[in-house]
Image 1 (cartoon, rainbow, N blue to C red):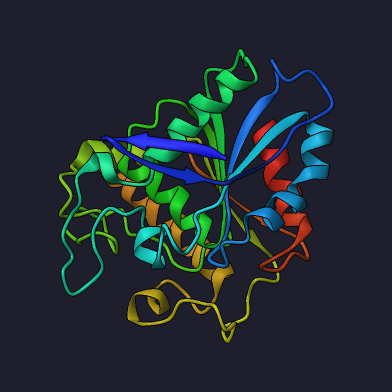
Image 2 (image 1 turned 180 degrees about the vertical axis):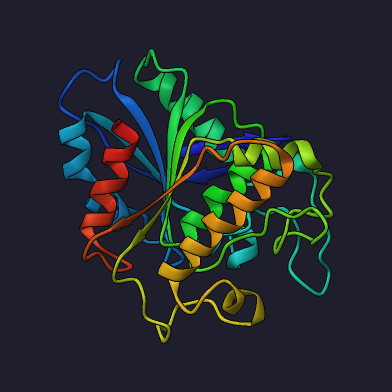
Length: 261
């Protein structure tokens, strides 16, 4: 259990973890964000074997429905209240900060010599990861993988958050920083069902493509064009995992291997 304290408020967050049999002090640390099902323990379980092979410590914080209800609180990082209010919350209340504080806690607990960590998110967790990278300085993140996201936040400060990055005091500097992150957009080759029951729909989602595979490709192309207009080199890459679906061991193994490279 990780006791997170910020601004005088404390909440206990269950953290499911895996540690390799190799030396912990030098092991890389991966913080992994689960999907909308909030099944943190199950997500940890599918990461254990590859993490052992790679010598990685994996931490999966559980953003349960009681403390983080709905997509505004989890996927969107508690940045603003859901409609109809839409109030932007103080930055110190955004749930992205939990990731940084968890890393500091874990690093101290295992006496790690690591000063940076890796970030992984699948499905709804990928939405959290992408927003974390876009909205925060995040100097401790070395590399990130966002896999099988169903919809992508637009890197556009003229469109209000959470659809875009507007209305929360971000500017072109934040866009440039986001586009130069060491990030891999990972998608399963078979995550291409336009009728998947958990696939986000609506005009914004459909404009990005008929399914997750198409939307991942669209997003990279969209951000390549934006990076060109801003005069920066996009540091991301897009990778398709052969024969992998939305929930697939091949996706999870490949994600951890990318973070080991």
